[in-house]
Structure formats: C-alpha cells, structure tokens
Length: 114
Length: 223
Ligand SMILES: Nc1nc2c(ncn2[C@@H]2O[C@H](COP(=O)(O)OP(=O)(O)OP(=O)(O)O)[C@@H](O)[C@H]2O)c(=O)[nH]1
Ligand SMILES: [Mg+2]
Ligand SMILES: [Zn+2]
Ligand SMILES: [Zn+2]
Image (cartoon, rainbow over all chains, first blue to last red; front, side, top):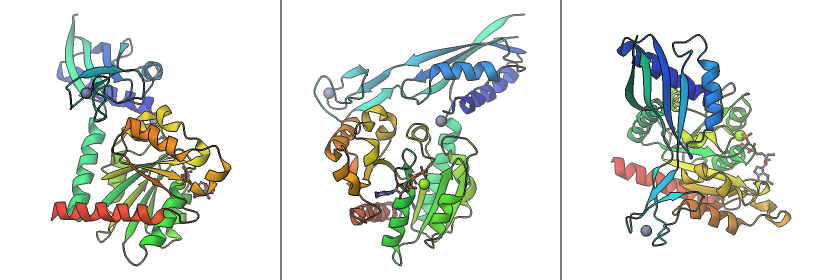
C-alpha cells in the first residue's frame, strides 16, 4: 500500500498549481483512479485527509472517480468494459487485447479559491 | 473571493515513468540487460539469483540490486556468491521506485551483462512501478497455490515472463502448474512460462538461455 506517497505527489501538484494561479486555497480535487491502478480509493481518501491538515488544501474535498477497465481488440476493433480477469475479446475471441483505460492515476482537475 | 476550476490531467506516476525511461536508455546504451523480479515474500527470488549466478559463472557477468524493507541479508547472500550486489532498504515502502534504482546505477560496473533487480516481496505494489527493466518476471511458488494469477492480475498483466518456482515440491502440494500457467496466459497472452527448482537446479538452463537470448537481442538492436 503506497497511498500516502501517492497523496504526497498530489500535494506537489496542488502547490504548483496554486502558485501558478495565485490561489490561497484548494477546495476540491478530482482524481481519476483505474480499478487496476493498484490502489484502494478509500485508503486514498483517508491518506488525503491525514495529509491535508495544515496545508493549503486543509478544507479540500477529494473526489475519486473510479475508471473501469476498458479494452480494445486489435483484431475486430471491438471495445468492452471488463469486470473480471478474462482479457479475451467478447466479440471475436481474440486474446490480443489492449487495455485502453483502467490503470490510470491522474489528477484530473482542481478547484482553487483566489 | 472566487473559486475557479482548472483542468490539470497530470499522471501521478509520471515522475517514476521519466526516471525509468532514463534508466532504460542508459542501460541499453551500455548493453546491459535489466531484469525486474516480482513476487510475494519468500517465492524464491534470491534463491533463483543464487542459482543463476552458478550458471553464468565464468561466462556472463551479473550484478544485483536487492530491494527489501529492512536488512542487508539478501545482498549478503548474493555477495557470498562473488556477485556485486547493492541493497536498497526502503524503510517501510512496499515497492522499489525508479529513482531508488537510479541512485545506485552509477556504482554498477559498466562491464556487466545482466543487472537483476529483486523487488520488495509484494505481488501488488511493485507492478505499478516501472524500473527501466527490459524484462519483468513474476515468480509464483508452488506453496502459494495455483489460483494467484486471477487474484493479482496487475502483476501478471505487466510481466513478460512467469517463473513457477519450487517445482521439487509439486508432488507434495495441490499445485497444478498447467492451471497456474493457463490462468496467467488468459490474463497475458504471450507470457513466457518457465518451471524451475532453484534448489535442485531443474529448469534453470532454459531460464538462463532465455536471458542470454534477450541479451543478444538487446545488443543487436543497439548495435
Ligand atoms: N523446496 C524449495 N525451496 C525453495 C526453493 N527456492 C527457494 N526455496 C526456499 O524458500 C524460502 C524463501 O526463498 P528466498 O529465495 O529467500 O525467497 P525470496 O523471494 O527472495 O524472499 P523475500 O526476499 O523475503 O521476498 C527459503 O527457505 C528457500 O530455501 C526451491 O526451488 N525449492
Ligand atoms: Mg529475497
Ligand atoms: Zn504499495
Ligand atoms: Zn475482437
């Protein structure tokens, strides 16, 4: 579990953006987290709440948008959302599947108070 | 006082990805094949490296970076085989990151063939962190059970090679190597699968040959 160190990287970005926009406070943070990103959204939220004390995001709300695994099949161009560990193409059975989404760990947008 | 929403779209792993790309480029230019070993604690990573050091002796030069939460023990085991080894103790962190590897890279002798990185024993977190390796191997030992690929898909999805270890224990355990391999291949088609007993040496020649072939490919691509 490395949620705390990921939250530290979130705060590096928050500080940089607040400075860039001359903002005193961050009030909302939206993270996109793939279900296969290897982190637990609840733990990210807890880590964020611990970390934010005494920072410019003290009163900020964290929103985690969970991104399901979406695959694309290079053989038939079919796209599908996956709920299990079976990565074969539901349409044509091909096993050369590409993961399009579901592994991301992204600070999508933030709301600043200026 | 007013609020405004700004679009950021910044990858939290970007810093690690950049550091990994720099390591990969440097090792390629030096003609060194880097292998990252991932597994649960105790699957046999260090024993595998000890056994490989015997196979490579007098033919190929290897070096090892050991990642552990605490202690120099694994690096000492490797050094006892006459192999240069660096221990990274993460002090609690559950995985190695590229910048940790980058810090010791300068000390790694230029004239080696293989750089093995033994990641922290953990089948979850290390999967998310590229270390600049050419080959990522996941080890699954027979006592862990053959149902692990579907339970820990990220590790298997990110791997190039699956090594089923402790094959000498197969007769004593309800472990079906064919089932473990099939489950892993359903997640990652094209995964190379090896079955070894590092303790007895079984299967080690084929694995060593796989690394030697990959080294030759790396060098012919860089030449
Ligand atoms: N029977 C048998 N035991 C093995 C084999 N390989 C390793 N072991 C044993 O498994 C235990 C763990 O092996 P290690 O090589 O230390 O495992 P590791 O993955 O490096 O462990 P960590 O670094 O702690 O994650 C030791 O007691 C080894 O002797 C094998 O091929 N057969
Ligand atoms: Mg070890
Ligand atoms: Zn972790
Ligand atoms: Zn298809």
